Length: 207
Image 1 (cartoon, one colour):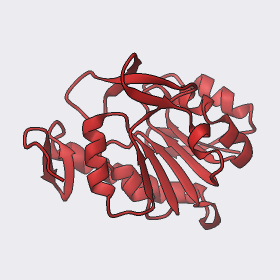
Image 2 (spheres, rainbow, N blue to C red):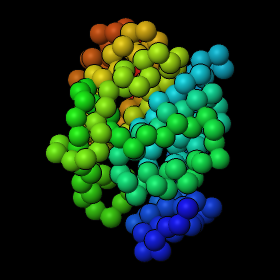
Image 3 (spheres, rainbow, N blue to C red):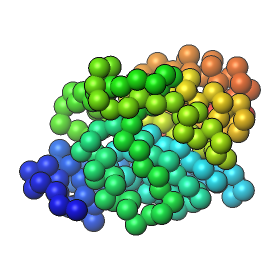
Image 4 (cartoon, one colour):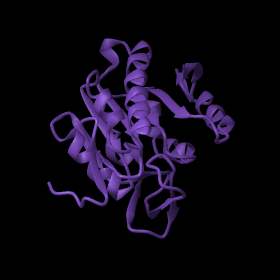
């Protein structure tokens, strides 16, 4: 696969968009590896079948998760990040990649990047990127983990995963700052969830 030289660069063995510097690359790789080690404490070996991860960025989280889960579904709406994610995980047969955003309805969105970073994208309506519900994609899967970093859209993503939550009771992790998340915690507690710990800035809930 060929990459325009002004948009992509190979660093630290990864193909990434040019926006992030080496310190950011190193930090995200380390965060993904640390998250995988810690999430294993919440998902015992017999509960490492299917992991759902969003947003995939340029691939560090789905690649790390693929080392301990049988199957990883990763979602990334940004086209440039998704291109890199695909290249960086192409050797992993157990990573299923979808260029889409997650929500509580079927629609279409666009990516809005507030600054030159692969970690600050947000989505807004009226674009050409699919907004999909997890229940439509993974409801029949044995989902043991939902790990969300969707820039404030975690609640909507979980609304679209109520069938998975009811049927599978997966471990759920989500970024809980700088965005308010009390409504997410209340929503999950209604399904019997409790707060079980933290991974960096992410809240982990189990039922």
